Each structure stands twice: as C-alpha cells, then as structure tokens.
Image (cartoon, one colour):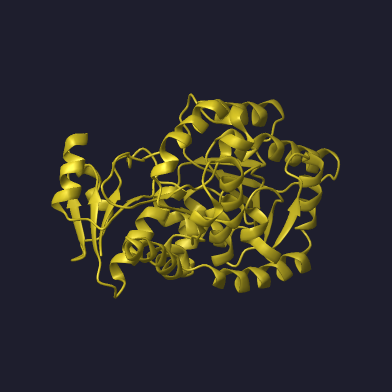
Length: 367
C-alpha cells in the first residue's frame, strides 16, 4: 500500500500533542511488517524529525500543482491528512483525515473564526473525506453531532504518550532536572499550552483557596511554551504577582522533551483542569509515570483517565481546591498510583498504528 501523508502545515514553532501523534504514528507504521511505503509531503526543514527508514520517502514540494502531480507520480493508494485543517480537495485517491477535536462547537469564543467560519470549512471539505479518524469516543460523538459526517465514517483510535515515557528516568537524571528548575520536593504538575480552554485561572484561584480557606500550600509547577504577548500567559503572571504566589507557583515555560519524564516522576500528582480535550496526552504521560491524577470531569478526560483519577468540576475553583487537598492524603495517592499503573497498559503506539492501518486497508479494499 502506497500512502501519501500531508504534513505541509507541520512547523517547528511548537511540538505539542498533535505533532507527537504524527511522529509516533509514522514511526510505528514504518516499523510494521505490512507492505507499506509512506510518502511524507513536507517542507525540507522538517524532514529530520522523522527516522531514516526504507519505507519512508520524503516529497519536497513547491506549489499546489506539484502536490497533484506528485500524487499521480507516486501512484498513491491513499491520501492521509493527520494535521488539523490540512485538507485538499479534488484528490484522485481516497482520503482519510484526522479530526482531533471540535472545540469550536463547544467554545466558539476560544477558537479563531468562531462557530460559523469553522463550520463552513468542514462543510466545504467533509464530502471529500472517505473516512475520519479521531482520538476518542467523546470526539467521535461530538463530530457526528456537530459536523456533516456520518458516524459510520468515523473511527475512534486512542493515542499514547511519547515513547520517552515508557521507561523511568535514572535517579541522577531526576536529580539533575530538579536542580535545573529549582523545584521543591513535592509539587503538583500542570503541563499545558496557554489557551483559554486550558483553564489556568480557575486552577490559580484554587491555589489561593487552599492557602486562605484550608491554610494549605501545594506548590504548583506550570510548563508550556508561551509567547510573551499571549494574553492567558500574561494573566497567569499578573495573578501570581497580585496575590503574592511567587513561592507557590513555578512557571517554567518551555521544557525540553528529555526533561519532561523527570518532571512527572518527581511530582506528587498531575492536576489537569482543562475545560475541553479531544484526548489529553498529559493524562497518559502521568499514567505511564505511575502518578496520581486529579482532573476535570469534562470532554474526553474521564474516558482517558478512567478510574485512575479523582475528578472535579473545572468551573468551580472551590471543587478544584477541595480535590487537590484530598490528594495530600498518602492513601489516596497510593490508591490512584496503583490504578495509574494498570490503566497505562491500555495505551500503545503499536495498537494506535495497527488500528489506523485497519482503517487504511478498509478504504483501499473498497476502492
């Protein structure tokens, strides 16, 4: 099977959950024993993030006409678009796309273009989708309910954490990371981009409630790249300053991928107050690190964390504070830690790749 993968929108500006999905999926597809050739359509400066593999061919492109010409020259059986809004019309071969979430339907004011512009985009391209892959049953139902895509066309396939989380970091590495970022012995970790649905404000209010109402301090570590002009990021810094929380909250900014497992393993628990997730890779990162989780009860989050988490209402700082306080109980943390270890076995890149390949094969066979 000859599969063209549209990565023309892939950039080096950030490497978040979607980019991790692409890199790990392609690596595991290439490592499969199936008779595949993967043609990666991307800019030349991105080619080094993918492994050198006999099954992977790099297609450097200059313009849209070149795309159509290359699809014919490569004799593709399938065109795959795993990146958000990277769809191309009038492709001569079956088209499979990944839609990670439909945040714009739940919180249109959080998404550029709002509800109408984003819906118009999907209405324009949806008829050309042979199959749709999404990352959770929650997202599958949301797509079917809000977009003109029949449910039988949509396949929910869970993701996994980056491969680096599969092994515990060495003690020396964990100690080095703790010293590098000047971290306390105990802390709650929230790794997240600074976007409105990530709900930083209610988490910060919960930290304040812990201090004022419960006379308790739980150090909080925030990671994630933020442009200095990002309004959410600036509001976080203002809140910390206005309420003298500098000793309680550590804002690390972008953290190199090699350091992230140690941040998890050194932490007491993951706190995850997001209002909406299509999947939520940090949840699986915490599961792989055998860490307790206290998190939002919204979106796909309960589907991913299962019984390995303590849940709160993310729109209630009081509830967030109360559940975080519960995590100070060693028996609660130990119970959730055991559940995390069991739950982590549900997620595998090998399984993700195999289920994705099943979708591809069903489309090509029909053709």
